[in-house]
Length: 204
Image (cartoon, rainbow, N blue to C red):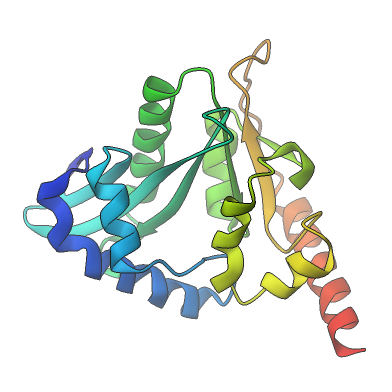
C-alpha cells in the first residue's frame, strides 16, 4: 500500500473519490458533505491531499483546506474505499495528512468537524481537543461546504453555533498537546442528546 502526497498524475481517481464520498454519506446518513470530481481535482493539483493506492487501485483519500489567511487548516474528506476498510488504513491516512499539514502550515491551527467516533479517536491520539464552533474558522466559505450535508438546516437554525458534528482543534501554540483517551460513552450520549434535541425542534 502506497500512501503519498497527491499530484496531477492522480486526476484519474477524482471520480471514484467523489463517488466513494457520496456513497459513504448515504450509508452514514450524516456528517459527510458531497464533493464533485472537479472539487477533488483542485485538491489533487495543489499538493494538499493524501491518496492511498494499492497498485493502481484507489484505496483512500484525505485533503487539506486552508482558511483565514492560513491561520486555520482543515483535514477534510477522510475516506477509505469499502474494499479496504477495517484494516487501519484510515488511521494511516489521517496521520499522513496531519503530518503534511504541520509541515506546510506549521503555525496554523488544524481543525475538523465530525460525527464519527472513529475519527474523534484518531483526532484525540494526534492531540486535538473538542471545542465549540466559535473557536473554529469564521470563514463563510468553509461553512458553505456543509450545504450538501443533510443536517445543514440544523447548522443554519443554530446560527453556526452547533450541529450534530463535534468540532475538534489542534493548536500548535498550546504548551503541550497531550493525547487523551476518548470517552466513547460520553460522546455517544452527547450525540444522542443532540439528535433528540434537533429532531424534536424540527418536528414542531
